[in-house]
Length: 324
Image (cartoon, rainbow, N blue to C red):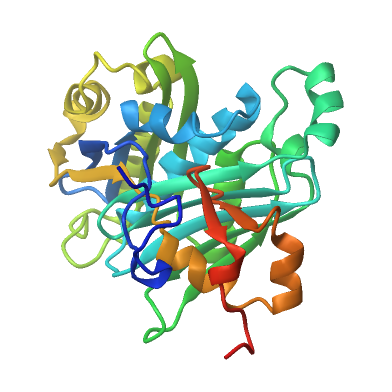
């Protein structure tokens, strides 16, 4: 049986078959909700077995894996709040031993992500602290949130300097300084008896207009928001990651006295979009000399950074830039 990772009779530019990666869908991966007559809305994100499938594609230290899982849960939760066609991504780029952290989610809930770690620089940090914080791993740099709806639409991107010890704190800085939006974010990722699990609780204060809490005066709106944040702060990582605790029951525990209303849940899926066609298009942009340098015994191997699957291409069959 042929595999899309190996050369075949099908021309590369026509081969869109999916590589051998897990086919996992979490039907209720994102549970949106709001509090009736109060200026509060939110999303509960629980990746379940999808987290383990995504995170175990790379053999990273647990601290790096946990950070990647938090980024995946956060990205899924933020994407679910937007109306768009395309992909929404989070990218953290710094000068630390984990110089790149990337997660993205499509409008259909296809989720993927990876962290690029420098093992040589990361080793001493792990030896000093088995669980270094996000700031120590990422270093100085920026955090970017990008909504890309394709070449026909303008791309929206928000940038903020990396500030804070955790990804939660960095996200709070972004919303406070760039979006002027009051939020409360709780991110969790850990290895459990069932494998890696990642989850997020995100609540936002919405404007008291347009029918959302507008009948409340300013003081009552502020009090409703403070109460929601105080209740959300009682949530533990263990509860957030517990497969045996359904999401609707967890939210009921937190907000049932505040008029909890559940909205339509959203599915999440394993979302790597690599293919021979996509990668052959990348190779076609290189010149002949570069392609020759990339080849080993006449074969060029390209590994998808998201799913860690290696694709092999015959150098003799690749025409680079400028070649007839």
